[in-house]
Image 1: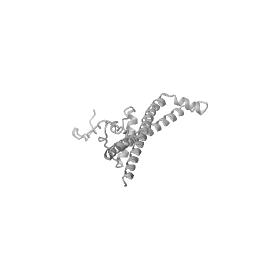
Image 2 (image 1 turned 90 degrees about the vertical axis):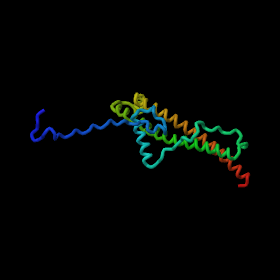
Image 3 (image 1 turned 180 degrees about the horizontal axis):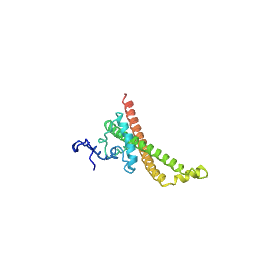
Image 4 (image 1 turned 120 degrees about the vertical axis):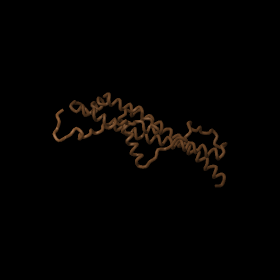
Length: 192
């Protein structure tokens, strides 16, 4: 290598350090909801949404206190003591909160993947602009593309989970309402 005049060997400019590769933690919010079946690129973007939510000061819920099994609804409410009735109501309320917390994260993932599905449809339709024919035939052809079908499988899974959570919330809500009515009935009968 030729030597430059006026520059000694000891006055070389040091090389910039090569940054360490960033390891993306796509499972950093896996305690909230399991999205491991989604591709890394989608999980990363959904995690960014979650990060934005928590940057607002919202806190992750600690669900360590929720029992492993959902409570069994009692067959005879009238035979329960008031403290037992209150305990069961508290357990159902905790499970309702747990399920609604999970639903909000699934809803975010569902909405994101739904938007990705629409983008994929638009991309596929964009490739069919030169084709002649009606728009419904083009949409049908675009929806049969492998990329669209793949994203559609993700949205199907998320819709299924979301529907199950909504049904579970409805069950908990009905149980809470029934238990609350029984508590109110007892208070009225006791003269409160």
